[in-house]
Picture 1 (cartoon, rainbow, N blue to C red):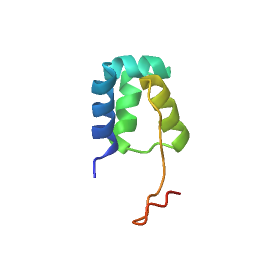
Picture 2 (cartoon, rainbow, N blue to C red):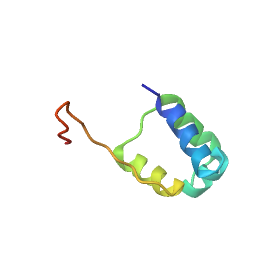
Picture 3 (cartoon, rainbow, N blue to C red):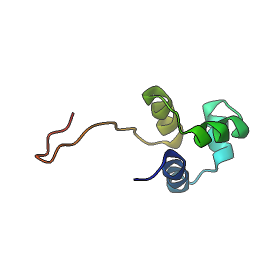
Length: 70
């Protein structure tokens, strides 16, 4: 399983933006964003804002072996 910092780096690359640009879009500093990435602690609301800044959709769900998603 990938950690949040790795996932975010991959998302930035896919969106074609730097961490500095993402921080700017989120209204924070690159240093503050980097610190948050070190802890990996984000609320679902934080992740929705990050996704929006990346031009993506944040999806949070549990998927069971029978295909059921919650």
